[in-house]
Image (cartoon, rainbow, N blue to C red):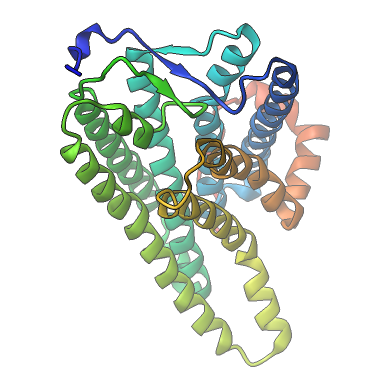
Length: 325
């Protein structure tokens, strides 16, 4: 079969989870609920941190940015899936698919880098507490955030540009609920060698390098905790970073489980469901994990609901790094 010119491709068909009509309202209701919980949960974290000056510290600065990224991470895929489910027109334009790939990779990469930066922040706080305010000063925090954005933007742009050079045949059915990059490569008629190289290279840079940094940080943290003499001190030190460690474990275990076992998963339905776990479920759980185990966040949420709404309306951009612990 001769491949079509890539400029003639007008749309792809996103088959989603099921084509059975009776299941569509259930799928729509489930994902709408998850999406709303994700957006409002992460938005509350941002508002709580911005309204409480005691939380204008590096740790909560990065947490608010993680919540911001998680909102857009899910917004890259779920609204389109909800529209397709509701209208029963499960198509996405060629241009829309490339744009979705770009923003999906952008926010997924930002999640990776921000989790790594947060691990480094915990490392400095626990292993070098006396130098914490000097090392994690506002300039360094801003620089770490800027580097995370630049790295993620460059890699996602490079991926998208390479993807846009592929030619596709007449079979344009994507057995997924969004334009997942590996599925697009499988549909290509042209040689996807460069795309496969980019996928593996990007996985190492955006996945392997941050994970290595997280493992190194926590190895130092655990070593420092083991050096604490009292059991109460050990528990207190470990409990401070337990929420972040749980989020990291969820994100990386689910993400690596999907991609490293992709060759072993022969069911496209199973692959789509597996992807939901880290693209949808993890961003939804993050606000609960950080708020339920964090007294400062609980206090800030109460303050926001009772006193902070007026302050936020008057100063909607009040988030900063004014006070250090």
